Length: 162
Image 1 (cartoon, one colour):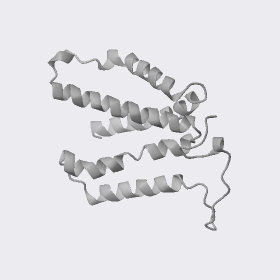
Image 2 (cartoon, helix red, strand yellow):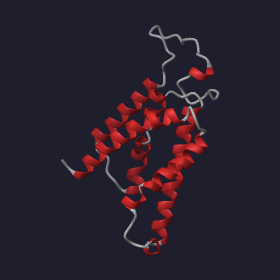
Image 3 (cartoon, helix red, strand yellow):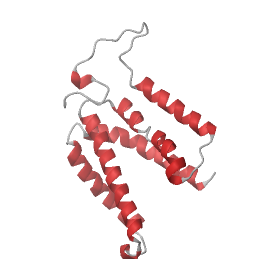
C-alpha cells in the first residue's frame, strides 16, 4: 500500500474521533475558546514536526502560503465548531463540512494544473448527493415537510445556542 494511503487512513481515524470530541467540547466552551485550545493542542505536536531548518531559510512565498493555509484552516475550523455550538448535529455537520474536496475538484484543473479523471468527478458527485441527503432530514417519504423541531434540535447550521 502506498504511503499516502496510510496517511489517509490516519486522517480518517483521527478526524472521525475528532468529530465526536468537537461536538462534546461545544457543550462546555465557546467555538472561539475551542479554537484557542486547538492551537494549544497543535503546539503539543511541535516536538514531533518541528522543522530541522530555520524558519528564516524559507522564501517569503513559502511562508505566505503557509500563513494563508493557517488562516483558511482556522476560519473553517471555527465555522465548523460554531455550526455545532449553534445546534448542528455532529452526524450532519461533520459530513457536510467534509465536502470541501468538491471545491478542490473545481479549482484544481485551473489553479494547480491537475487533471481530474471522470471516475473522480463521479465520486465527488456521489459525495455531494450524500451531503444533500444528510441535510434533508425534514422531508417525509410522502414529500411533505415535517414540522420543524425546536431550534436546539435542528440538524443544520442555524438555531440558537444550547
